[in-house]
Image (spheres, each protein chain N blue to C red):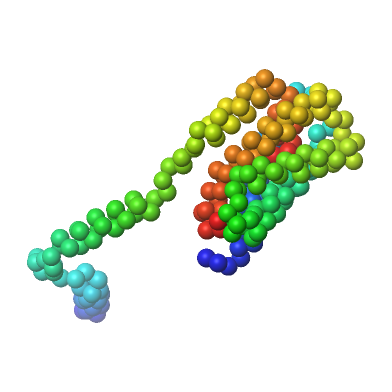
Length: 137
Length: 86
């Protein structure tokens, strides 16, 4: 199964955030329309809907094509993705004039390592199993 | 008369079809069944070997899970921010 390895890597990469997007969208919709939280979430929902899954796919392509032959750990590589996503997400929020709550910004020094831990686990176990299933790495 | 002959022809046709479909029962074994049984057992054990083993989670991953869970418990404000980046 050596054909279309880039396509398979992309699909394996986008699978996890795409499935998780159901949870994200449900939580944000509940917060906004059930609990009437006065934050215009719909303004920034494009980031988890479009940017995050695509970056996961591209990150996995990069891993499969460049790093997997060099025996780099998928979990460690995946844990680096929040370092790119966090500033990007913040930038998108600022560009779209989303009022980022100040307590969230204050929690960033804790949030970033926690995000990296969760990404490490998700990449190691979920994306790793998908890659193995698709005979990628 | 004509009706009887057509009924007979239909009966013959049906009989022929049934004979063609169902092989005659000879009541004897066509071969030793034991080698086939052994083959099946070997196939089943090969299938068990190919089945993926349960995921082993090392202790430091459990520690990381605990750390992340504790952080989310003590700082629930992180949850929407993490959902936004997932």
